[in-house]
Image 1 (spheres, rainbow over the protein chains, first blue to last red):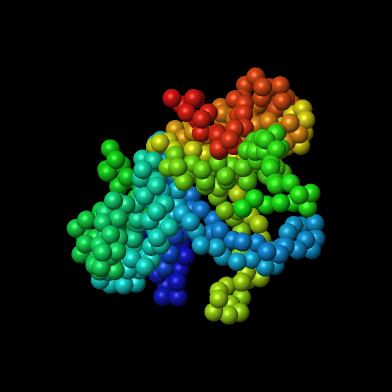
Image 2: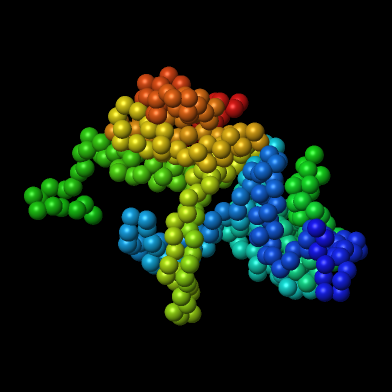
Length: 199
Length: 199
C-alpha cells in the first residue's frame, strides 16, 4: 500500500535527495572522533579477514575496588597513567603495524606537542624491529587525513629539537605525507597506504 | 676500612652463602606472578633492542570521573571489561608476536576454561595474518614453563569441543609443547623458542 501524505500525493523520494543522503551517510564523518573512525576501519578489516588491529585500552592505575555483590567488582578509585606506547597496533599480512592517531582543529599546522617523546622513542624501536610505523593526522576543519611515515615524522621532530618550528605545516603534509581520501568502507582505508609503501 | 662486628672479627662473607644467594636471585621466581616475569623479560628485550613487546592494559569502562584539583582526574566509578584479545603483543625482527600467558596451581593438567573462546578466535585470526601466536603456561607447583604453539592449542580445544577432556595434561605439554628452562636474564626467554620454531 502506498503511503499518502496530507497533500494527497503518494510519497515518492526524489532521486537527487536520496543520492545526497547516501553520500552523507557514506562519506561524512558525522561528528565522529578520529578514534571512532579508526575503530570502524579496524572492525571492517577484522570482519573481512584483512587485518587484526586494535586500539589499546587506556592504561589505568586501580587503587580501590569494591565487591558490592556477586555481579562483580566496582572500581572506586583509579587514575589515568601516561601511555608508554602508541594507540593502535596489530598484524597485517605478516607485517607488524603500529601507529598513533591525532586530530587537530588547527587550520595551518599540526602542533608537535601532540606527540610525546616516549611515543617517538617507541616508534623508533618499532622501526628498528622492521615494524610498519606511522602517524595518522586529521585536520578536522577540512576533514582531511594524512598518513605520515615515522621516518618523515622523525625529521620534523629533529627540526624542532634543533630550534626549528614546533609544528608541521599543512603544506608540508601535502608534500611529504600521503593523503587518505575518505571512501565508502572503510571510510579511512589506511592499510591501502601501507600496501603502497611496503609492496 | 674493614668493618668489625661485635665478635671482633672483620666481616668476610662466606663464598658458599654468596653462591646460594646469587642462585636465588637469578633463577628463582621469588613469588612473582607469571605476568611479572614476562614483563621483566619484555623489559630486557626492550632495553637490549631485541624486541618491542608489551602487556596490554586491562580494559576498563570508566563511568564517573572527578576533577578535585589541578593535579588531575580521579576515576570514581569504573568496571572491568572482558578483554577481546590476548595479553601480550608486539614486534620481534619483523615478526608480529601475540600470546596469552596463564599459570595454574594444578599439578597434573592445565584446565582449558582458563582460555576464552574470543581469545581462541583472536589467535586464529592472527595466525591467518601470519603472526606468531602461542600460549605460555606456568605450572606453578613445579616452576615449569611451556610454550604451546597456537596450532597445538587449537587441537586440544577441538578435542574438548568434540566431547574430549577439558584440560591439557602435563604429560601432553611434555610431549607437544616446548619447555622453557629458566635462566639468568631474561629468566623466561620465550623469544628463543620463537627463533627455533620460525627460523
